[in-house]
Image (cartoon, rainbow, N blue to C red):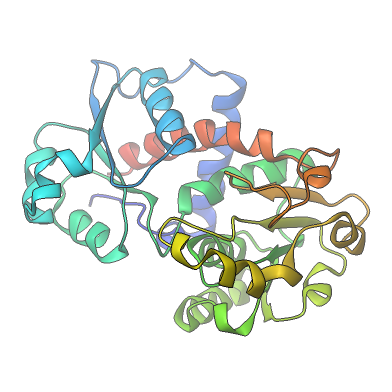
Length: 307
């Protein structure tokens, strides 16, 4: 059976820990694994702009002994309307894995359904699971554990990061609280799935419009840009709707005294996060950005071993 990573809950709680443990070992011994020696190729398809995903996967594949085949989706036949399943069948015969950063989740699911090699979600409008692997690795790096910690996410709770925090946080046994305006609420099906997962792992899920409630005692405070790709036309409306959910010094003071800040980047200082917080002593965003490399190397290695 081919294993894919389309969304966070494609891994079980135990499998998630296996990937994170491997990521830690790979970080300590960066060039100690060569599962792609040959070199074997990994197709990296980008329909959306990217810095961290493009760099971390390209460098990661190379460090695993492989060749990162970067494809601009707009200039490939995908961009001209070739069926997704046909692309999957062609690539599967020539590469060892496929990473796709795209728009709708349905297209990624279709690709995985037709692929005979692992397919990895490099970001869709619904989920950003590779980012959460890095986030969880970063939390363990600074807190020493995951289960039982309290994570607060402030901002747009309807976006891909919020959905992935719900699923991955629940898998890891975190107490996840999302706070944002009711008009930007998460997908109810994702919330329900996260609650079912949390019931098995000892975590919990809270969705609220009250920032203070979510921040109370939080060990980790997370946020994301308020103007994601595709939202540029509604900048003023979004800034107004989300104004009460900024991660300011006052917000961090409402969390636990040793709380750390996560942000998947790019960050817009003065909007979703204060510059003094992002660049301050509680921020671990640069560790978080680096850990994309190690977590994704571990993920690719794990998927190849289990497929």
